[in-house]
Image 1 (cartoon, rainbow, N blue to C red):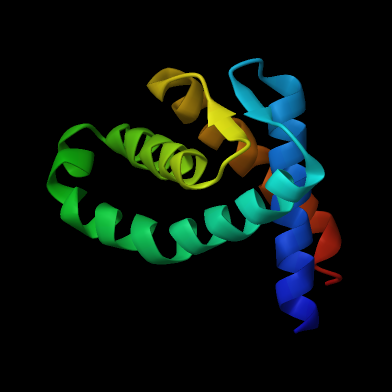
Image 2: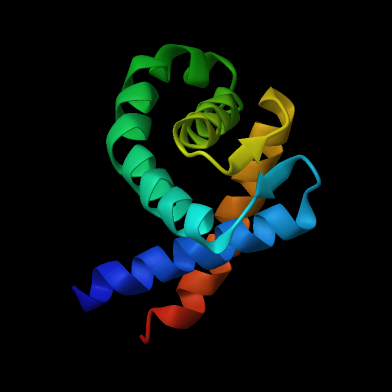
Length: 114
């Protein structure tokens, strides 16, 4: 349970920072941020692996660049599912997913405790 809460907190902080940095990503309240962090974690855990496998041929042909589109799609899907979490379009979603990934990676490095 503790590990889940830490992971959720990392996602929430990274999402808040992404919305603060990028004008095309908006989270309207702390409640929306909390729900968006849970939904984004679930979408990344359940939907993204399926999309990654289904789009593997085109990802290989584009030398991995299409994976950015898959990440952007999952970010946009989470924004679609959560009221109060908006993304200004597909390219904002791709950029938001990229910034979110970098921020959550660095926060995760410091919060792992290893």
